Amino acid sequence: MKNLTVGCTSALVGFVIGVVLGLGASSLLGRTESSAPITPVMSTSRNDMTIIVSASYLNTQLQQLVKQTGLAKQAALTLTAPNIAQINVTIETRMMGQTVTGNVSARMRVAVQSGRVVLTIEKVDTGNVNIPQTLFAPILDQVRTQAEDQINRIIQHELQGTGLRLANVRIAPNEVTLDLTAQ
Image 1 (cartoon, helix red, strand yellow):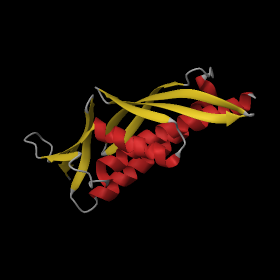
Image 2 (cartoon, one colour):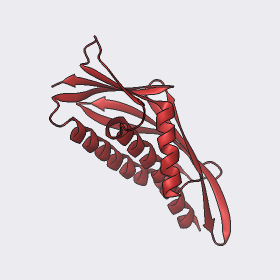
Image 3 (cartoon, one colour):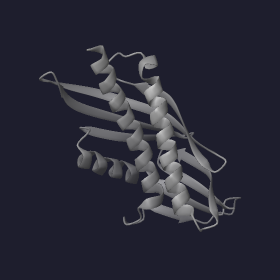
């Protein structure tokens, strides 16, 4: 039973982190069909271009992703300065004929080093399922590494041929800002 619980919790936490990171990367760089959720701003600071994505747009995209995948009952993204993204997910699953509802939240810090996004998982809360973090820490690190790689691949692909590179990511309560500089 302990292995089943650890496995389910690890899958849920992996889902939470993957959703946040995949959604953030694709929304920041890949989708522009909505009416101005991404706002390019020419800046007089050392950045050559700034892209701003609203928290409400990211949450709308998250809700659509949750609805499409059916993996979670509901999810919400909370942005906090300085550079904290937290996702809270309510998941309902059936185990041994019983419906089990769990709340999982993951809090991570987002930074840029050498033009690459670096993620640091600060806290994972599995709600009413009490599992020591040492049991799922290796899985979390693997998910974090894969998410970083995926985000950085998307960013590099989108910036290819533009002469721009990612200089900074700033997270505030209402928006995510990408600062780009000429290479």
